[in-house]
Amino acid sequence: MRRQRSPASDGACTFLPDPSLDCGRCGPIWTATFDPSVLRIRCEPCAADDPWAFRWPNRGGHAAVAPDRQHVRLDGAEPLRLDVVAGSILDGPVRLEPALCLDRDVERQILAIRRLRALLAGDPLPVEPDPRLPRLVLALRVLDARREGASLRAIGTVLLDNSDWPGEGEWMKSAVRRLVALAGALQKAGPRGVLQRRL
Image (cartoon, rainbow, N blue to C red; front, side):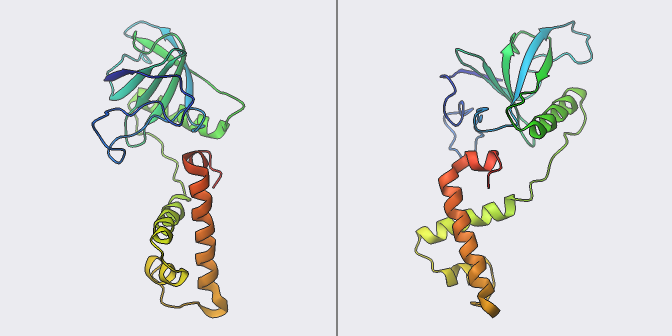
């Protein structure tokens, strides 16, 4: 466990787990403002033999203590984010009681609750494949290419690995233009656009 103090969470992420690591090797804790799958949790003291008892830090994770609440990241293949709004996750054993927030993406919260339950039960965590990711990654590569001065043709023939330029009816040129537009939208929206599924 790594416990750190954190300022009030009005930014994109609460803290980086290890300040000595660069951002490519450590995971930020996104705030609920950015990530609708963050769960609001009440921690209720319980008996140690309660089948749903949670004792920190019996699982890998990080906790940041801010003036208003504890921000928790439980590590795994896909980290699970909790905002403790009552009680303390550090004073286990506790029962974790999630509360749905109706002004945020309910489906994403329900998936997070299912993942939390699987984690506590020792079951495999359900994962929701995101079909947008390959195209968003490609858009990031297009963004880098445009910054380096790559032409539309170079993007189509190199990044998309297609020598048919501009393609019958200029289909390839149109596809590249759409990718360039997506890259610009991605740059403008930042992490919020991805996490809130605006793109």
